[in-house]
Image 1 (spheres, rainbow, N blue to C red):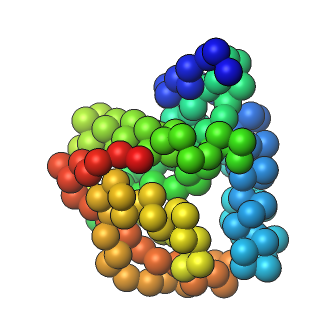
Image 2: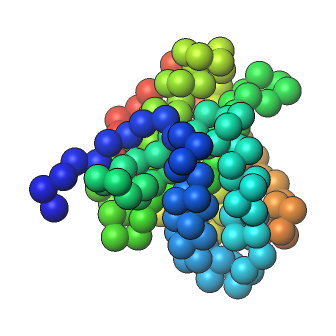
Length: 165
């Protein structure tokens, strides 16, 4: 390739690329559940723009192309909700997802005072679950998504940095 993947905070100009990448990346999740109405596939571009402006959003760049993204925000209970982690299919398996997670966790902890992190993964999403467990997340429960998909809820404390991918 010749170029390095750079992790940085998302800008307003990244919103459209994040939106398109999310749509591409979550196709495999939709197929896994036979449900093409999952939240990442029905989210609007305006909604992504609002999240980039208000939340803690990081992107992975390969040159000018956004090849990964993740979002996080503080919740009412003081935990940080992390979601929409995605890496372009051609670059999966190279540690980019773990790097994005580390970046958003660090920012949420240092800039917004998060003391623990929470994320949800579909119960059949074994690759995602493996990544989350490898970086220190533990299962704390289950929930049913608004789209009907059974989700596994995972959490870790903000000081629990495990080995990366």
